[in-house]
Length: 217
Image (cartoon, rainbow, N blue to C red):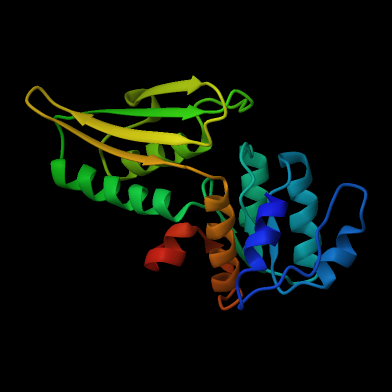
C-alpha cells in the first residue's frame, strides 16, 4: 500500500509523499515532515503511529484492518485532539455501496433477509472481512438486522482476488443484489489520498470515508 500511495501521489498535484516509515525507521522524524499521516501498517503498530501523531498534532488517516476494540477506542480517543479518519475500506465505490444499502434497508423495511458474500485472496486471514462487517454495521444501523447474528455472512478465499463484496436482500417474492469488485488495490490508495487531502481541512474529530464523499457523520 505504501508503494501504491507513493506512485499515485506522484501523479497528483495536490499532495506529495514526504516520507515513508518502515519498521526500524525513526517514526517521529517521519511524522514531523508531514501535514497528514496515512497509516496502512499493522494493528500492533497503529497505536504507536497514532500516539506519535497526537504528540505532533498531525491528522491521521488509518486504513489498517483487523483492529480490535481497544485499538479502535484508542483511535477515538486521539480524535479528541486531532482529526482522525478511520475506515475499514478506503474504496470510494464501497463507500457509495455502503450508502446505497443503508437507503435500501430503510426503504424496504422488514420482511427481507440479508446476506453478505465476500471473496478475497488466499492470504487474507480475517473472515468475514472488515468490509463485510462494515456493510453489516450499516445494515444494522438502518434496521435491516438487529445484530450481526441476523446477517448471513459467506466468506471465500481463493487465488489473488483483491476483494469482491455483495449485499443481497431476499423476500418470499423478490431479490435485490448490490455488488462491488476491486480490480486493483490502487483503489484503496486513491481513496486514502483523497481522504488525506480532505482531512487537512477538518477540525479535530472522528471521520470516515462517508464524511469525505457525503459530508455525513
